[in-house]
Image (tube, rainbow, N blue to C red; front, side, top):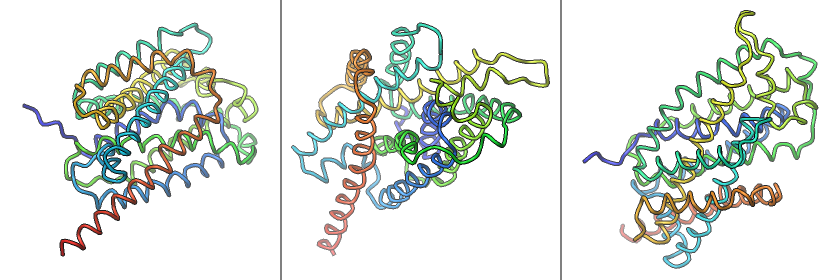
Length: 339
């Protein structure tokens, strides 16, 4: 039987691929200096997470950390809250995937189809989802680089003057906190060390490049008016004066990115649900999470954006800081008693 293990490199490739589509939607309509500010704040969080997580026992995922930090009953209750948030996050990502096809009536077909494909992947092993993200990383990365390189020719320097309000960093920050979902997957990661800094710099470079190219080509006011500035920017791309009209390629690129994000969220939801109820079957937990997300697709637009932002800050910022800190302190106290 194949072992359900994956390398840190596979996990990091999955996380970067999952970030690609939401970063393309959000950062393409945000000024570059606010994207940089969001990257600094998210980077501080990940420095803390990586530092603390390296001292934790191998094979301990975030669902197990919740129980260790808060006790059996309270830990399972927090796991249920995480499951509910992951269900809503997947539903929101499904609705955001509609933006990959601006001007077309794709609801509910596109979100439901992407949820089904993601659920089929998430119902298998953790390693399968990481390999899925690793394969998509090659295609998504190549298409993104291709688009940004040829789109850079339309950038006008006057459009890159610092502009906007500090509150604009909240959108990119909410997206950049998403890799904290990967904490749920640590229970299956092998013992090797990953170079997290390089992968974060890769994601940071992508976020800044999306902002510079899209706002530089369109201007920040026009980018803000568009629901998908990245797609709009791609309409003017010309390769050597011969190849034009890349909208279909961009839509496919974004759809792949959102499918990877959904697979990650459903896998984490599966683990959160089994953390609260360990007897749940793996496949059933994944499909139950996907089904609950599909049922919420219609409710997503009714919820204020501020609610999603505060939820991201709580579940992917504050709670991981608190949980990892408590588990680390308890481990130190246990070691001192054993000495």
